[in-house]
Image (cartoon, rainbow, N blue to C red; front, side):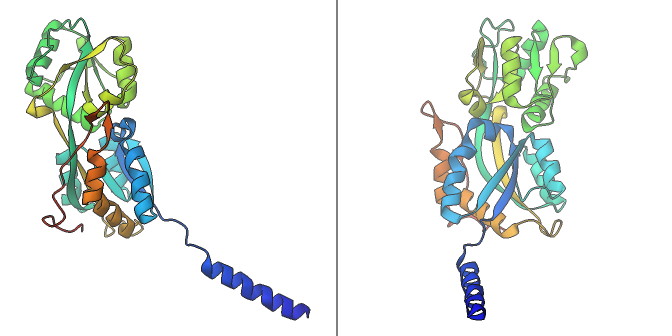
Length: 279
């Protein structure tokens, strides 16, 4: 009888094991502090997980660090906002294909008294020239993020990129939230993506002063890390994530994310019938 009970228990355990659901797959997405701080992922990821069962762990760092993580194979998907670096990532074989995903824009914010007199300007480079001419305090992220890279390119257009030796230019080496908090305390001018600015609560004396320059457009791309470089990556689940993001459902979810009635990220992926399949 004991033997019969033991055999029965073994069959029951086997049946329970066979019927138990497989553990949910989790992918790692290396992305930016701007997408994380804005609340976009909190809006998107529950929808994706509900549709696919796949969970997503976001590693939110500056664009430069996110790319380095993906190069090492420490992420399955890269979602950042510095197109030249993204294209180099694919060209060098680390990514399969860059998919245009969405865009927002950068703005220049600064103290309400506006000592450099840039309020209302539609020319970001001219605004930076005025800030330099007035020796007004400017705070840079200084963290090799997409925002920092764009800021440095704008300074180069304005003549020469300033350094901390100038006395009015400071680098903090931090994400956008800490940079804004510090700029509010100084106070100082800084470059920020609109999504983070709209979601930022501790503005203090800071005001939005410059917007609308085409050079401030901020496109985001998403790339699956290549399994040829890193065979351990979850390539199938990564493909599903990107497929969903660029699908009608994903693009609609991106476009529906608003703060105070304002769209933070504008979807740009082409309709499913006209785009190439995710590779």
